Image 1 (spheres, rainbow, N blue to C red):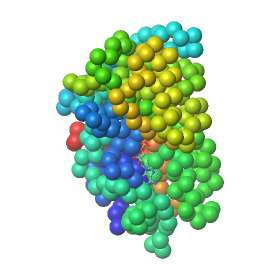
Image 2 (image 1 turned 120 degrees about the horizontal axis):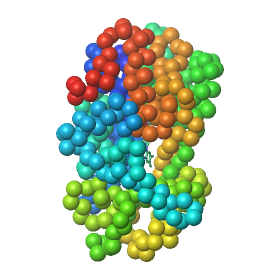
Image 3 (image 1 turned 30 degrees about the horizontal axis):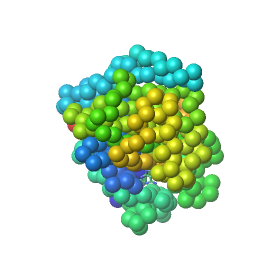
Length: 350
Ligand SMILES: Cc1cc2nc3c(=O)[nH]c(=O)nc-3n(C[C@H](O)[C@H](O)[C@H](O)COP(=O)(O)OP(=O)(O)OC[C@H]3O[C@@H](n4cnc5c(N)ncnc54)[C@H](O)[C@@H]3O)c2cc1C
């Protein structure tokens, strides 16, 4: 029996769990993956690493800037670029100066999540697929491997459509109509991501990344090796457009990857892109919120506290996930003993 169970060890869940743990609550975090970070994901590949989820982190507000400053001091993050390119249908490549610097992690973006995971009690490889309430009015969570967890409060820090599937295991009419309506109204765009490595002799482009506007196949291409300290070879990460991913989500991945590379060849004029030395792919069913809510977290009207949070509460990037995790912690605290929460000072303890 724990006071608070946080489902999901992405940015929102980790920030929320840190805040509550530091305030003195007993907190467990449960995630279906073996690692932490969710969509802030890094894959170890041959002699390098590739960020196949979030590509970079760009602060707008004070909280994210504080987190970035801390990680820069530790040497975990560094400035990647102040310019990103944009290409629209007319094929002209425009260099866009950024409103704030874009930071990346030489050892992979998931160092950010590993930093936030410090000291937390995390149960990995446990997909929570059932949630019920026992006779003592406590939440009872069951994972697909039949691990059981009991908690007096629950934070559901996963993409809204996954939260809908999970919360449907509760008895009908247990959750209020408005709450469910809002949760069900949040949709996501999918993406298919290609990671591909090339011989050292390849002539590298001058740009570090291009965002494609209205391209039917491509969403983004980044020279991921430009984030590494001593890159062994050039490698790229390419995200498909949402339309393309929707159409080919269930198709054979290697074929889909080839098609994405062929399109990249003609779009960015790098003939050698179609012949990688290695290629890996990843499907993101829930990549970016299409219809985020205009609120920082979504509490349910239940007698034992339950709140949903994630990037879909207020935005579609790392920054909104962080804000949402903080808001969820504040909500749970307001329903429990109302202890002193560290606010953004929670970062100082790490
Ligand atoms: C391809 C791509 C590129 C992106 N690029 C950027 C970028 O450059 N900059 C930026 O700021 N943002 C970017 N983003 C968005 C950013 O990654 C997300 O906004 C942010 O990471 C979301 O965090 P989260 O905690 O809300 O959710 P998630 O990261 O999705 O975390 C949810 C966690 O819950 C776990 N989970 C789900 N269901 C269950 C269950 N039933 N039981 C247990 N665990 C469960 C998952 O394993 C996951 O770890 C990108 C996203 C993608 C996909």
